[in-house]
Image (cartoon, rainbow, N blue to C red):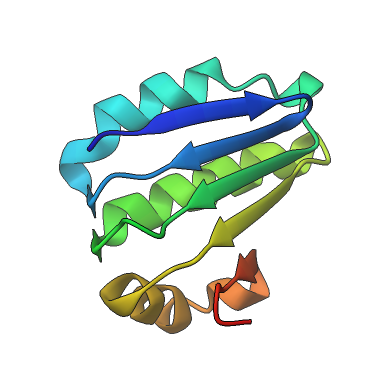
Length: 104
């Protein structure tokens, strides 16, 4: 699986691949460049199918958040599982992002 971008009105959802890592950088940039921050209220990263995330992908998420903040766009991380959830917790992402867990 690669990235998939779904748009609905002013809401974008990015479905992330099973492995969201250094090798995902070019595909991520393609998705990022297609985002229209001026025509967007929310960006959700659906992490439900992602089994692995590394420091490079953490940086990609932070980069998106930083850019979104400049446009008053909300960024949420949806349904992190397993190792991904642990990386998010270790990175203190709950202080930076809205985290939506399917167990909530």
